[in-house]
Amino acid sequence: MKIIGALEKALLILDKFSFEKPEWSLAELTRELGWSKPTVLRLLNTLEKYGFVNKNSTTKKYHLGLRLFDLGSIVAGQMDVRAIALPVMRKIRDKINEAVYLNVILEKERVCVEFLDCSHTLKASVNIGQRSPLYVGASALVLLAFHEDRERIIRELELKPFTPTTITDVETLFHRLEEIRQAGYAISWGERNMGLVAISAPVFDRHGKIAASLSIGLPEVRAQKEKLELCIKLLQWGGGEISSQLGHQACKLD
Amino acid sequence: MKIIGALEKALLILDKFSFEKPEWSLAELTRELGWSKPTVLRLLNTLEKYGFVNKNSTTKKYHLGLRLFDLGSIVAGQMDVRAIALPVMRKIRDKINEAVYLNVILEKERVCVEFLDCSHTLKASVNIGQRSPLYVGASALVLLAFHEDRERIIRELELKPFTPTTITDVETLFHRLEEIRQAGYAISWGERNMGLVAISAPVFDRHGKIAASLSIGLPEVRAQKEKLELCIKLLQWGGGEISSQLGHQACKLD
DNA sequence: AATGGTGTTACATATAGTGTAACGATTAAT
DNA sequence: ATTAATCGTTACACTATATGTAACACCATT
Image 1 (tube, chains in turn orange, brown, blue, red):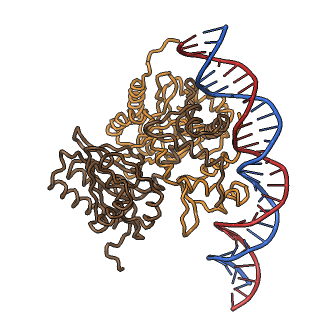
Image 2: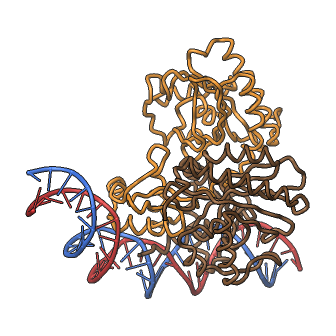
Image 3: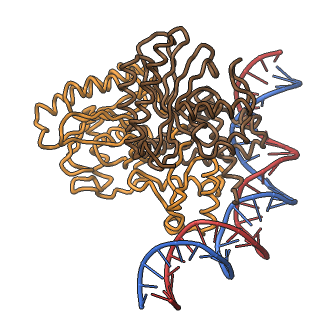
């Protein structure tokens, strides 16, 4: 499969922009990507002409452009998972008053596509659109555990630790995924953010493939046994509810 | 300013995708764009590799990919106009119970960045991310009337009619914009959608530049004189409110 | 069978993207 | 104040690479 180099470079430039670093200067990008200045500049000019990036005319720094917002909105409109999930998520959030969020797989990462806040001062908070590796946290592990290409994906992962409890070797990862598949849900204790507990259950589409993971995030201090059990119950109910609305048949023959 | 052709082509491909037509086959794109099949295919392959488009493996048709969703979310996070406008928009909607929306300029078009529904069965309904020309409808005309480069932009516009009341010659457009600037708001009667009335007022940023247009859309049958006057009052209040929160000084010296 | 429509691969040509180098314009340091 | 360093930008020659033509396999109708 042939790839267009110039376009690939442009996409790699766009990938550099994130919530954490939404502004880049020409020099920063050339350093980071290791290409010549004119090359990066010409690509940025082209991206700017079509509104994919914008240049601040005083600081000369670039940030992502509005055209990405409207293209993103088209994608959002197509993601019926989101529309279906939202009312279910609201119910769960209102029952338990903790942050509820929905993640899907994108390439070798997970992306948060929906998030509902709760009324606590100390609480989990995720940005919609935020990405994170596929091996850290309950939401990610659920996505991985039920994914049909999990073995290939795992082979391509680099298991870098985020916290002391992050899984860092393939053996334990496989073992953990097997447990999750049997239990039908996952719990993680501070794998990505210290002090944060996450519980997550799978959502399946009409073909029985994993479509998303539905999760609750809360601080350890509020994670008593009974509460966790309620979380599991709510998420399994919610996951099943969304799955069936997506056309998934709960009882399938094997 | 040098432009990279291959990248430009890829961006033109992305521009083909819309709410109305979110799925394209290779053949359709080659016809529409007038390039050779291998060219379009290679560009699509590259876009697909990075998640900017996705190919349905059974129908072989392409649709926009999830990476655009998360890049779009980053842009959405930066648009403080939206966050500031939302509570103001809610107040207006609750007062009048008609659709309220917020538009910004993107290149030579307007884009809807926020939309609030109302409880009527017959009502205006806009998709967030939806684009439309800059010379049709009150929202667009307000954006144009207060834009510093309006003369250049207008020169590059092609005034095609949407309905019998759409403005189609430059002379009347200029005249209309002048009226809008003096009045401080705009009303349009079915310029884009027959039977739909729109009222719109400007939002300015801290530099006094036009940041957005705040609008109400309602069917003609509910557009009585007193109601329109209330709309104008609400939008001018709202526009001023959002502008001042963006750092705009209402009284500036000239 | 035969046609017209797909999507895909191979290959030679010349276009067009590439880096080096030099240019002003700022900003930081002496 | 003068230098030095770093920024963004432009010019130009080279060769890498994006390009279209053509032929391929595949699935539909007819």
